[in-house]
Length: 565
Image 1 (cartoon, rainbow, N blue to C red):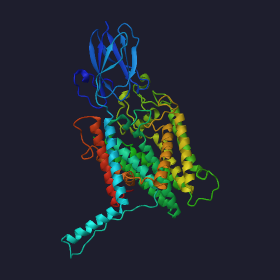
Image 2: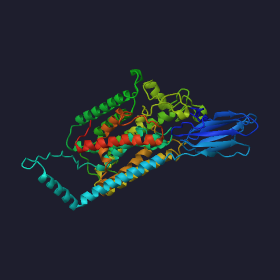
Image 3: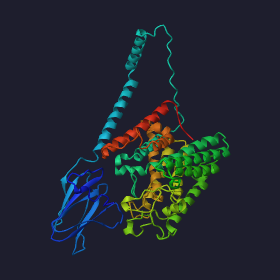
Image 4: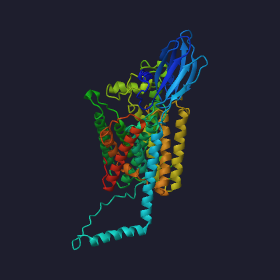
């Protein structure tokens, strides 16, 4: 990855795209030197030779500015690393480095605009627009004089117009389903997830923190899918209890869950076929909707099988836990199976317990072991029918699918934590009891997940990894989901300090928005190919595409249109 375009900076005014910078190196020594470098994000990767310079010669090297870079040089007479330093380079800057025996530092030759300026601009614009919209609504709602004036103007217009003496027909506006019995915070949380998901899937302005993590760690893009699954579990628990109380036959509930799951899986395969499909032999089988469908199927069947229609009166403080020991035991068994497979299955050529990306990781020792046993299982079962994007930073050759088979076991835990949140909502009558238990569950799962990761990105017992859906990852994300739902529940449903708009609207048609944004991705007006490849142009385009889908969701809500399966 370091040498993707080695000659791009050789021009005096190179055409750099986002996340690129140039380094001009001058060798002032009287001997030949070799420049080595590597990105700090590349875990335990060997340094790569970037250039060889004779006495008095110079060169220009292109770097990616997403990750800090570590550089040093050696001489032809001594392989010792001289002047080893780490530097965070800035986008479109041109740096200089005079290699001397005194180890002179890098210096800026040509600065450029701050790459985060488009984000600040977008934030200011959105903040001003939201503030103005809120003020207009407040003025209109609280000003009886203004409303009377508008009504009076309408009457005067009718009196002076040509419609006098004719029948005045006023079309009736469609009645909007207000869903008074819904927990609005759930729809707001779901809307937050789908809006962020659309934005990051459309590119997120090409910023690294709006993209998925290279391997270990968390970014904004890593959060929304697990949270969406958590919300799915919470909604399942709430709707299932209502149906059971209304004496809906269990066989009908089984049928509904199986039908919905199969539709989700089928839709997922259809969406995969829309992504640069050449032949059926290259069709990707796993995917986001497939993972949702399988998780919903398993947890839904377990809940329908073990949940009682009418809960017995409980006096225990653990009435949301003790009566449900069987489904909880099932989830624990799934996690144990996942852990045992991950750490104790011997993968040919890779050994046991490898959790890395392969390629350059650990000095190339596990070059063809991308994803460890999880990747091995997917490549063995699906063959060519998996995600085929290599991890460029690690220069991997083996394909790996982040929605593979083994991750289903930990996905069940995320969905079940959502079920547990819904069960607490259904079981305890007071707001205090609900909130306390949500906070307790969130704290326990969050601390446990961080402890498994060793409170660091790499080298923990079980690193936080979205691509692997590691145990620490699902624990941390479930814990955060408990806290977010608690906050939204208090602000939106209890104290009513915020109506949840505009996130409430996408939350009411989330599946339609997800399918639609995937189908129309990179098609006008939702997306296009920018003339200039900068963060600003991509950020505007991706925000515009997201805005259009939010506008569509508002239109659907106002016209009483809701899509469900």
